[in-house]
Image (cartoon, rainbow, N blue to C red; front, side, top):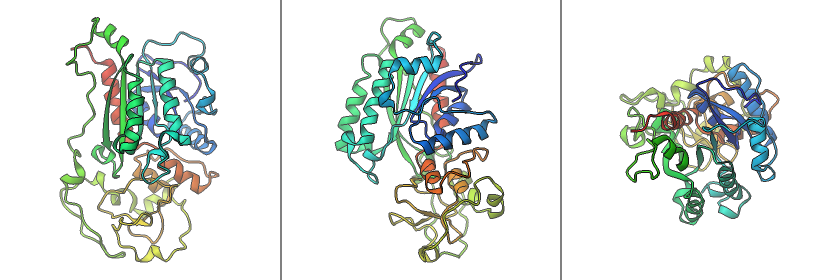
Length: 373
């Protein structure tokens, strides 16, 4: 994050591509990683990151490189990340290339789209830099949609000579985030590094090298719990029993006095549509103007792509802080006041929920540090 390449004895260095506002980085920070290099091209995302991460940590942070990754070679990245010192034996790369070209709700242009091309370039950068491990995150459409799956498989095959890879779709709801958000994660571990760690020439076929994170409190939450249905707007629905409060939006955004006291807590778009008054609480059936239910989880946060979410009890859209909370972002992370609201919401919608990012980071740290079995 900052350019100061000084690690403590416990930190594992990572390079962050497509950093955005840094939600993925926060999850890795919380698990003991240190971002020694970051790249973000969008100027508003850069502002969001630098202000937000600085407020979160209490120290000033800057994006290391704001050029398009198309223009940056591996030697330049290594120099900037490690300041002409020897590249460490253990380091990682994390990132989620822009996903609208693989999203059903987005452009859906696939590999030939402007953003789709960046997925291939990201893979090329990983192979050039040869990190110990990497994380590739994207929308599930890249993995589940037939026309995009071939492209995804071709990307994965590029790693086969040097890396072990594993792929899984994870839903943030299964990790204590009050949001139904499916994302595909591909994790890779360098074969040469693992062989050295195991002291073998050939990695055993049955070697279980990665344990995907799982939280038994929330696993299978969508089907596991009995969720309440719609209620007329303005009526107070009964709170159901047996559902963890962490999976409901109400407990984190319906205390209006608390929300008003928080940074970004009163920042929202002015309500001008009559729709704000008659859409039922919990009616998320339409493409836009979905009203959240206080005792349910939120649909996927995708603000900036014609997605509008309404507050459960108020005739308005969500505020910036409410949206950040639904992404499980700490309240100490603050977006700058001068940043336009539309860009704030787009920035929030593009991020990985912090709790899910942290769960993946913990799993990766265990993979790297665990003693061979």
